[in-house]
Image (tube, rainbow, N blue to C red; front, side, top):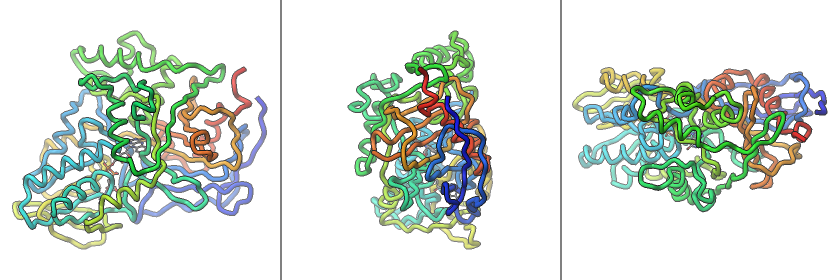
Length: 477
Ligand SMILES: Cc1cc2nc3c(=O)[nH]c(=O)nc-3n(C[C@H](O)[C@H](O)[C@H](O)COP(=O)(O)OP(=O)(O)OC[C@H]3O[C@@H](n4cnc5c(N)ncnc54)[C@H](O)[C@@H]3O)c2cc1C
């Protein structure tokens, strides 16, 4: 492997490289100032990108993680408990309250639609309803209530809508930089029927069902199909091992007397979770579930990896804005306290103002509820507090790299690092499908948690070092 010594300069106008280090940290929290001094990097065979943008959802006060997951020993019905209305005044939505597709874009939308139905069944004509959070769930609630001529006011903590669906637009990027959710299982026509092999009980492949639903939901947005994959170890390029080991382990775990982790379930069926190909598959799984295999339930496991995926290239913020048409939207207005009684609900905002409504729909992320980002008066009932603490908040982070010239020569769109201890093990190559020299790294679980904590320079170093495996000079003979 030929190795060149490089120095990475981080910061606008730094000459050799301008790396745009964007954070998801919202207003009013401070955004990090780009580092302007040259940062020496150790030897790497990977050239420095023209621009780099990373997410930091783990440290973001308005998300505190990326996606909810079901911990070992926790029932999926815990999500229904979380979704249950409190005294007919407080309603809950958000991906964590969805039992079918938790932790996803579609789950968030579905949860919002369900919450809107619950509100409509309770509210009298002329009532004022508040929705807290303008992510996909909040937008779905608000749209359904507005359709029913109910007056809705949406309070959003950030200065933008979309929440964990964040299409970051920059003049010098050819595509929206999707810092949050943007990937879905491909619809069956694209996936050629491969799906995940996970049956949803109706005889229809679960990934196919999700893929179809996603294609309908986001029909107006530009998408790209990501179908071919590369599984690379330092010694060889391998075929992917498929989901059979995971499916076997999950099926066997269903008859165990107690729930065990996915890692234990694999071991129970004779699989070795440390075997390099299986470990790479589990690393891929964490990029969608947000949680390591030794922390997730095997009774209620996360959706298994889809081999063909659809990426949304359109502006998800625009999609959310369209949903919010006809509602009153207040940005940069974090809700800090919710007081409720028989007469109604009073909201206190971070700005110091208070305002009253008949009912409120709370769509803030599970991580925000876990960290007590909102005070409830009186405290939420025990079942709700129990559910908030029982569910897990997983971590997913992403890093987008734009190059003037590609340094890679593979046409594969989904890259997986096998037998690697690097931080970023899953990559998306957007060049074949879009013609743009853009690579997207995705991390999940502990790796993502660690990545979010890294300072910008250390994060950039981890990213470039992780890419070394995919440089042509590293390709196995
Ligand atoms: C990096 C990453 C990658 C992901 N990848 C995928 C993927 O490929 N496919 C997929 O399907 N899903 C993915 N997801 C998950 C998906 O993005 C989420 O499930 C979905 O966007 C959640 O929507 P939501 O409306 O439930 O929550 P959010 O989008 O988080 O919306 C909640 C809103 O509440 C606001 N808020 C928080 N606190 C307050 C407060 N105190 N007052 C007022 N407002 C507040 C927040 O700012 C936010 O706008 C990913 C997530 C991340 C972070």
